[in-house]
Image 1 (cartoon, rainbow, N blue to C red):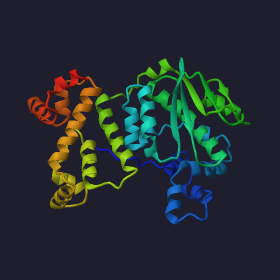
Image 2: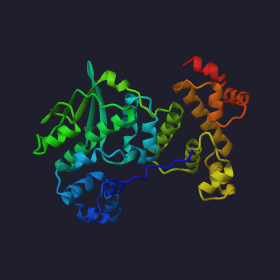
Image 3: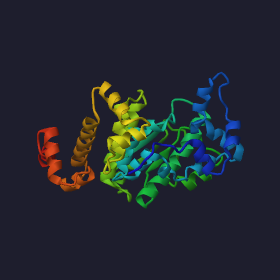
Image 4: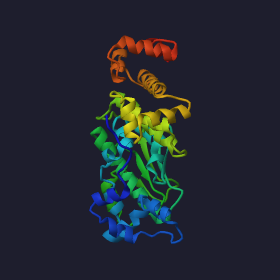
Length: 328
């Protein structure tokens, strides 16, 4: 399994829609007092690029149209995690926890009522126009992705929007084929609870465990400088099923085997310790969140003999895999 982090930038997204990268950057409105590195950061945010794209296209409903682009498969680890979910409910849970790794200054919230679930879209930064454009991009995309992943249209109850009804209302009806209510307290989609159990056609519980662990690593790294052991851990999780040896890991980290060993020793660990930790972590996730047999899990963790996996699991947890599953 060879994966990358999210590399599909907002500029890539708009280029996919036919826009010229240089023209977009030239039309971006940025604070002139920003340092060069801050300008670079802001140029990577779709919230700043959308107004430029609307201006270039002279199409006020552009964001609604762009919402039809299905770019989930281009979102690296996060995109693979979404596609491997079992149902829409699991996707929403994933979005809530890991959307910050997309670094787009937006967030999702979930609220539960008697029969419906509200999926709210919030932004605490940006102008009123930027927030409106981002909502017009996000909601049609939510419907489009749900349809792609489940092979059926999302049966939402209503869509609420905080801004007034626009002149291009007919375009809204095209991409959001549900009752629309404007001038509401929240930007939200109301979905019947039963709809969230709609199965995802690309579901893969075994892969979901790996992708979610990778997302967790990325989320934790947002607030820390990655050390060597964290880098090794991510490479091992990413390569689950075909674990690299210490020479291959050292090569991927652009250092010698001896340098890698010394750095891990300074962090009070070793390559063998980390690989055992990763295998134990994944083993417990598989046992908890999938119905895979112990033999299947042993195979996924690169054990040629199920008995060897059982012995290792007992060494790590003082109980067999079957006993661990029974006490859940």
